[in-house]
Image (cartoon, rainbow, N blue to C red):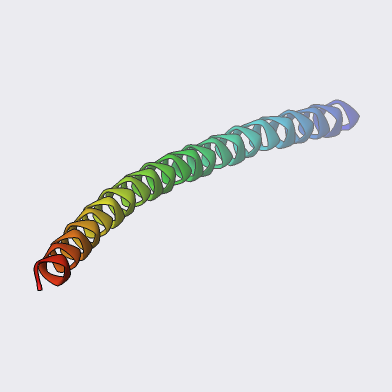
Length: 81
């Protein structure tokens, strides 16, 4: 009977260790997946911000060019009067 109990305790310990190993692996895999999504999201947001900034600079440049042209045109009209 003592031998049976000892075998049972050993099996219980082995099962517990195996379960902890599986759980640890699953947790690590989930953490890795979350990290990959976070990294991907950061990269996507960074790319979108850079594109928005570039488009904003281009729009501001065009508006400034138009304003400069309008002022020159206005100045020429005033000179001719």
